[in-house]
Length: 119
Image (cartoon, rainbow, N blue to C red; front, side, top):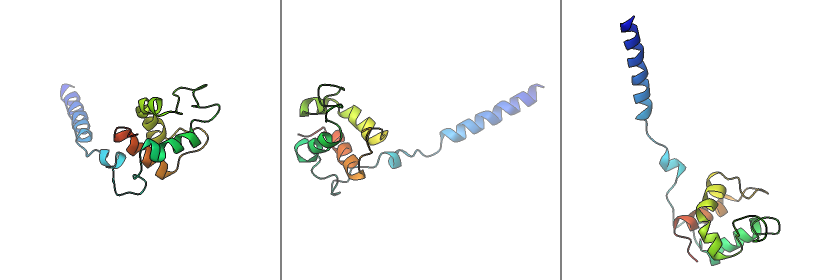
């Protein structure tokens, strides 16, 4: 009985080690920023981000500073929420709740967040 147990355990370890060595899809899931991309250009708060947030997030009943946090009507609180913005709008894509952002707006937000939220 002991040899069958060892054979089974060895097979399990082999399968687990095989799966652990497969190539990661990190590059596909997190593409590098292409600064020549027109969507990536003007990824500053004043350039495009404020308009994206105002139209899609910072309106009455949502992130307008009176209801839902974070307040996305001003640079400082929006910049402080960059990690959450990137997670919810660019990765999970479950914000804004009304409709998904365009691919270009997602790229702009992602670039803005990943480059230090330039004003």
